[in-house]
Image (cartoon, rainbow, N blue to C red; front, side, top):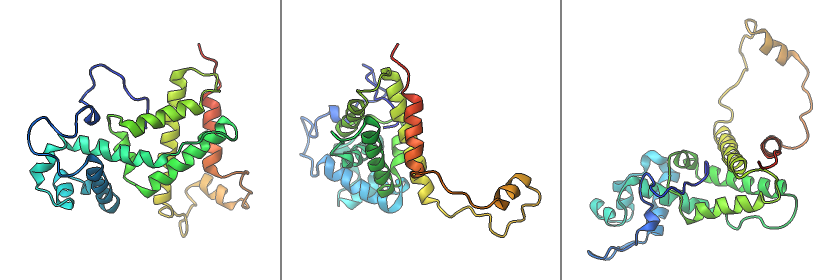
Length: 227
C-alpha cells in the first residue's frame, strides 16, 4: 500500500499466492493460509512484529516449528499474508456519493482506523512486500476513485503513496499522544517558543487536521493534466 505494486516479470521473490497451498508431494497442509495469517496477526496485535516468528506462529497453531515451512517458504511470506489479510478489512470500498475527494477521504479514514487496530501494520507495509489479492483490490479501488481526476497514472500512484504515509503518521502520532509537553519548562532561551506560548489561544481552522491535510495533499498532487 505504500506505492504502486510492481509488475516486473522477474520480481525480487516469488509471490506466495502464485504457489498452490498444497504441493504435489508430501502430507496435506493442516491449516489454511488464512488460518496461519490470522494467528500471526493476533500475535502481532499483542506483541508487535517482534513477537511474530515462524516458531511463535507454529506454536500458536499447535504445530511443529518445522512443519510451518510446508505452507510457507519464509517469514517474508508470512508477513505478506498478514498484510494482505488486514488490508482486506478495508472492504467494502466507497462507491457512489460525494466527490472523488470525499470518497478518497472516507477510504483514508478507514485506513487510519485499520492502522490503529493493528499498530504494527505500517511497519509491515513499509517493507518491500509482494502484493496479494486484497492489496491489489485496494489499489484498483483507489484508481477507480481517482478516475475523474485529470492527472497522469504516475501522479495518482504518488498520491496513493503519500496518503498512506500521512495515514501512517497520524496513526503513530495518536499512539504517541501526550509524550511531549512544554509544561514546567523554562523557555527563556528559546524566544520563538516563548513568544508562541505568550500569545492568546487562537481558534483552530474549520475541519479536523486529518481532513484538512489530506484534502490539501490531494489537491496539490492531482491538479496537473496528463502529459
